[in-house]
Length: 269
Image 1 (cartoon, one colour):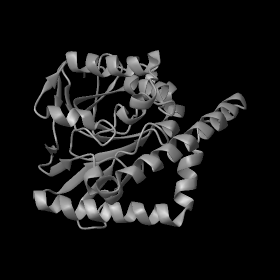
Image 2 (tube, helix red, strand yellow):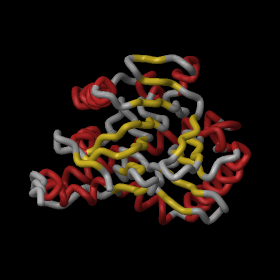
Image 3 (cartoon, one colour):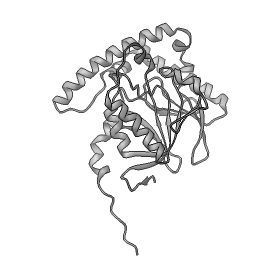
Image 4 (tube, helix red, strand yellow):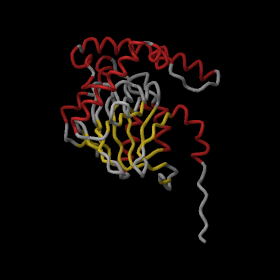
């Protein structure tokens, strides 16, 4: 069982977040702030593409909510959480600072996380095993432009949904899973990364990059993808017993009244 802190937070052993893409209009910063309001951890892993340097390099966009996310994470660090930042391709400028500490945040190329039940998990963004990013970066930039365009459409779509009283729903995520090539790419990425992770002599891999939250072991190793905070608003947590769980926050928000309710005290016998 996870601890329930005095501050009303669920305290996990570890929390894994990736692909937040601060600095873009598609970032669901409000949803992430809401999630962080209720969830804390002994160790917080930022598994790449937290800040979108690609977009900020072309056009500056940094609303207060994005600053609030950074401050919220740093505040958790000041209160005792260990924060490990594993950069991705969109925040690759941080790859020049492996081993450095910024405001209590450790920057690492990758990290071997040891679970409560003794397993070793490779924590890595995953773009290193994306052939488009590695060998045709211009195509990756083109794909990023198309993706941002789709997200802009998605923003308008969900604005209308909110006005009508409906919950957030990702049009782009739905479309991606309907396109055969995208589905094949996801499968190839998962298999390639799982295969490469075995070279680190680990029991599993925790990654991000492709914005597709998933947990399975179909390739002979635990494969956990944290998803993103642009489309799916997902995170992975490790419970105190070493068990992992994928949280889909856009679906869990309906449980907030129960989460926020004071926990009954137990009378002594």
